[in-house]
Length: 471
Ligand code: AMP
Ligand code: GLY
Image (cartoon, rainbow, N blue to C red; front, top):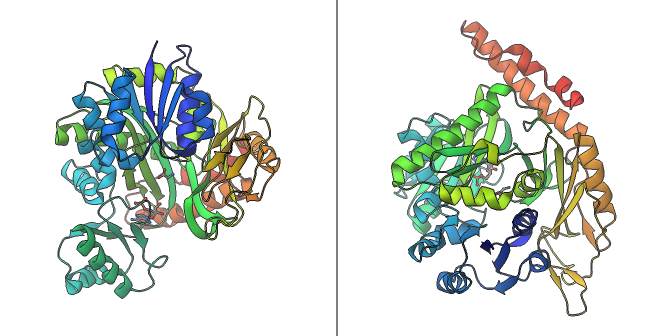
């Protein structure tokens, strides 16, 4: 029997366990999580709660259970070298070694790698290692014309990136934060602030073998209409054609090509094949697409959209990733739409005062999934809220509308002091994204027409609304 170590946390870990358990091979899951997760616990044959930085203890569990391979969900253990430690004891991982995980753990490494290997999808950027305010100010004012983003050069739980005009008001605020970053971690990346629409494309990678999953759009703002503070992600959607309404075929091709080039560059640079999930965070801009960031893992919520769509055997896919036998035929996704809505405590992400309150969930039908996040189960079997996102609720359907209807119906049937964003996957929101893209690209067409070197097809740029309605 196949035995798999799952090092995971929250709803993404539950979605991975669920995908594994749908395998006809019925693998045994040996789970290690930082807190007890009732979803993972119900599927795993053993479940140990450990801090995920306890590399030695995790390696012992893997050895004792004689696992075939490990799947590592979150970024911190990857940056700490958990995959390296397991490999030293002969256990391969569906996750990169520390050297490959730098694509996420160092913003500087990611940008420099793309520059070195001529992957021309970065905004204008520069790395500073000297906390000299005059030089940084000059770069922001003169090279970036005051439109800047400052990136801490190490993992910081999603809090290391500050965008001028959003998190930082003035150029001086940016300079100060950049100097703080240098003092704290030795380096900072300062880059051009891009305008456009963000999306994620996660690829399954084994060395130079790269297979793409459906593109997904995340919604980080806490409240309806993309307002309020940023969160870990309030929800996501994907489309039956595995593209997104505001992208044209050329954008999808570019995003796929960039992930492929980055996988090749990682092999050339580190000397070892990258094995695992490569998450490209992209922005569609006026003249194509750009890379915002890379992650060395499955996204959360993105994994909750992608994994339920997998029609092939996920355990076999993981096996092929570690064996470097990955093929497109092995990884197939249903041509369906998904909408994932995160249910959170009512006062999330600020007060989280509902911690400990009981919550109950409806039973999903075949088109729905519920993946548990920050939730605990007491001795009487009662589920209780934590402080963070409670559960990712996914609807799957032939159309985006059908998927959203299922997700919304399930969310509305959750009983407890919780909330969720009702607008994710709505026609109103996807049309707004399309309008943004069309307006940006119309202005690009005007510019290129003047230069007599049109690079985009005006019809493609203008076809967004029609596309949304037909899907
Ligand atoms: P990251 O951790 O690099 O994904 O950055 C977090 C968020 O900051 C992204 O999801 C974007 O919304 C924003 N961001 C990062 N880099 C840029 C950029 N160059 N231009 C505009 N927004 C950015
Ligand atoms: N969805 C954003 C992330 O997983 O980092």
